[in-house]
Structure formats: structure tokens, C-alpha cells
Length: 185
Image (cartoon, rainbow, N blue to C red; front, side):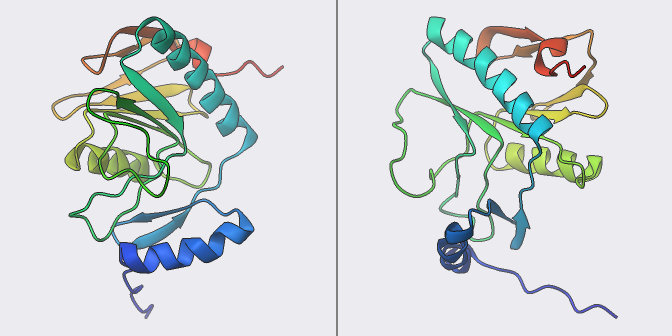
């Protein structure tokens, strides 16, 4: 019988990541469990393509900031410290943090599936972002070249032939799904 893992609080996690920073290991705390992020080069290319599309939109519509790998910790959540692959935070009433985690959730959280992450893990993580205050979640599945869009009330799966939009969070934003996935030939 396997002993259950001991849950870690955000306070304990902070001490751990201060030590882990020496080894450049990206760690998250999700419901008291430490998760190591293991991005691949394909993962990084998809992040790059999405940030380019978001940056172009935000140049013309400066309503938000886009962040790769920024940390978020809610004051009333002692069990989680999140690092979405990409996050979008509306500017109104906020300034970017210069130290530590942001004390709120981004309006848009984007996750790119890594090879060892299950579809269920990705959807559960997306639902968790929504439950904690995000308004929109994009889950990118590189192997299948799909994007799943989650809102508090809807869930849609987009294919390579569809267009990803920003909904109420980024009005007027759109990018063809095929432009998110790099051509590797």
C-alpha cells in the first residue's frame, strides 16, 4: 500500500522554491501537491506563437498584459501557487508585480499539454483556474493540434480548421488555430 503524500502549504512551498531556484526547476503547487513543469521545445514554440498573436492584438488594444510563466497565489488559498504557461491580465486597476506572486487570478489562463500530462489533468486544471476566478481558459493539445476553450459556463473543442477568439476577455481577438502550431518539416 502506498502512503498518501503529505500536503504542502503555500508557506512551505515558498521555502522549497527558494531552494529550487538554484536549479532552475519550474514548480507549481496545485491543491497541496508540488508539480514540476517539464516543457519541451514544441511547447516553447507554441507559447511563442500565442504570445506573438496576443502581443499584436494588445498593441492595438492595450487593455491587458500578457505574461509567460508568471506566478499567481490567492490570499485565501493556502494550497495552490499557479504558473500558467501564458496568462493575460486586464490592466484596469492593476500593475504588474515586481516581487512574488500576483495575489489574484489572470482573466485568461493558457496551458499547453506536456507529453506526460493527461487530458483529464489538463481539463481539471482549467476548471480549477475558472473556479478560482479566471474568466477564460485555453488548453492547447500539441499532439492532436486542438485547443479546448473553457469558460465558467461553456466548453468547446477547436480543430486546426477553426479560429480561436478572445471572447469577452479580449474582444475582437482572433487567430486561426493552424497559426498556433508550428510547421516542422
